[in-house]
Image (cartoon, rainbow, N blue to C red; front, side, top):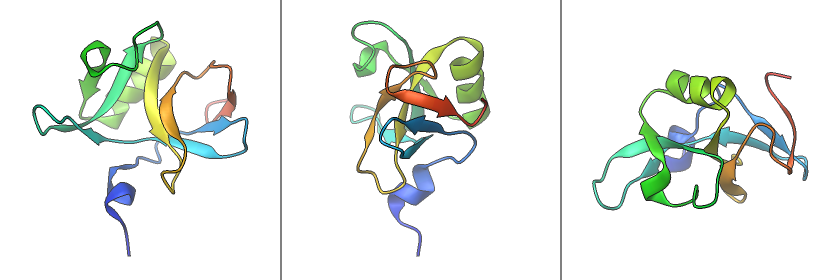
Length: 99
């Protein structure tokens, strides 16, 4: 039976973390607006703050930001144990589904 997290994870693309886990983009709920979206940000100090993130509804838009504009994206492992903002060329990412 799918969990709430399963319904928010997209399998459109993945990053492989140095731990060996695969990470996938996932939707989060904005506590202020209640909106559930994917989040991307320009890789800079403060990118982890909601106000510095772009909220996107469509995973294809997320894909374009991440692989076309080099944005970071909020990702997690299927079990939700590992999560955070990751860039395709980030220090803990060893490869992506696009390599």
